[in-house]
Length: 356
Image (tube, rainbow, N blue to C red; front, side, top):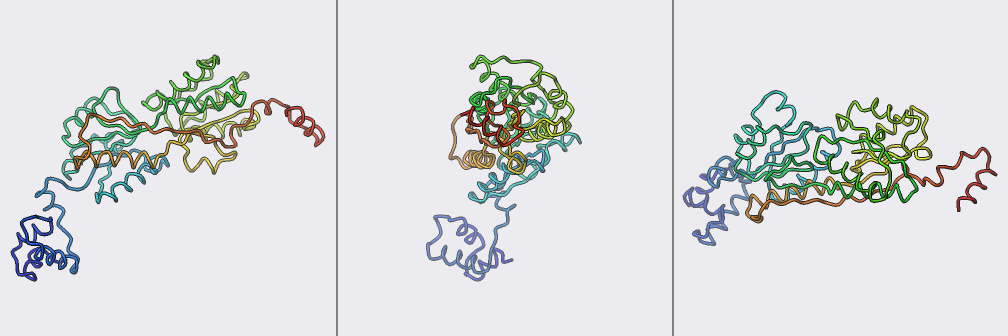
């Protein structure tokens, strides 16, 4: 690869002149600058990122702390992030937050050594400790949290309007005639707290009873929840409908219902949250709320890059994207599902005629 010194030799100028010309310095004559830039393009010159970082104080890279690389939600967020990074000409350095926390690694030193210009923090399996938060406060470049917040903090945030979205899902169930509604909750994280509040908002506003037995609080948002959901659905007086913290838990609920011989949606309606690709692969297909995960990632990255480049200089920003219900086969009309299963075609016709 050609160097600035070699470009200078070809153009008959000093290396310092080449450096200034490639950075668009106004003190270089237009003809000289264009000649240098043409030679650089012709020979495929690429600037030394480390030298550029020392000269400008910017590495043109950001750090991303991720948790679960197999999660479809995190994957869609990462797609959105890298779409924005590509637009701005930035690179990324990704670490596995939870794995490094478990191993006692100094997380921010990983980012600091690479002089990243800012941080994006995706949802973590375990909320950060006070010492981790203190480390983040000591990081002098911008930080944007994605999907989860940790109490009262000073960092920018981009996520979902979880409370309103969960309330809307319960409202859809209510419109279909369901009254005994339960929930599979994961309240250890802020998004879970917000969805729980949205569930209660919708129930109270419609004067629906909230039965504590129908609230299943799990300890993991993805794994090892089968037995807890099974205990809920084995109850003689079980819920008619179940809203779940996310699509993975809704998948567990569908599996439990299948194993217990409970028909969905005829005997039990189930909703998820997220609108992950798996929703359309399940049978029945899963009703859920569309979090727009890719848009969340793109929005968070653009906010961070605007902070880095000086386009956004105001106080802390909190951006909550709407999540609209996506209605599929796992929720049907409760009015119809209360009818007994027809034994003959004639009975089926009579039932349909009576329900119209």
